Amino acid sequence: MIKGIHHSAFRCRDAEETRRFYEDVLGLPLAAALAFEEEPGSGQPHPYVHIFFRLPDGNFIAFFDAPDSARPEHFRPAHGFDRHIAFEVGSVEELESWRARLSQAGVPCFGPIDHHFVKSIYMWDPNGLQVEITARTPGHDAILAEEAQAARRVLEAWSERTKDAKRPLAA
Image 1 (cartoon, helix red, strand yellow):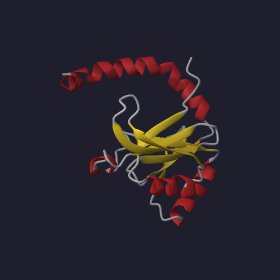
Image 2 (image 1 turned 135 degrees about the vertical axis):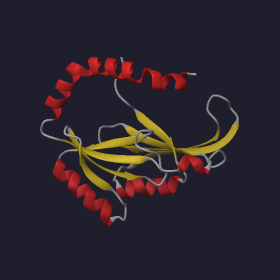
Image 3 (image 1 turned 120 degrees about the vertical axis):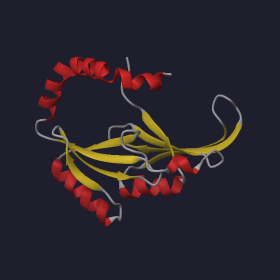
């Protein structure tokens, strides 16, 4: 059985620039910086550093700095539908504190957006990864419990509704 997420990993443009954002701005301690000369599995020469930041729950967010294979398109800001990471804080008041902290650090962010079960603020890290900081609303658990009851029905209806639009994507 899957126990949880150990880490999510992304490419970074520059390990030190990434460290400054995740450690100095977001307060996540640098837990490891592992330098390697070969690509895992293939043994091909490919120098890179793999850095890990510890989350309070013991899990990590990690990044690869591999300049020999990095291309500018890797670091264009991605739409949140394509990829984003959401960190959770303990309250909506704490979320507001984060918004002020980010503004003071010169990190542009938008929100809070009210998603009903959570409220969130959004920004981009130095690598083009959208970062969300979210707080559960008082109705969070009840809303998700209610949504769970309808989830299969909603997914079946959605699949039926969008099947023609998805045919070209499957080809």
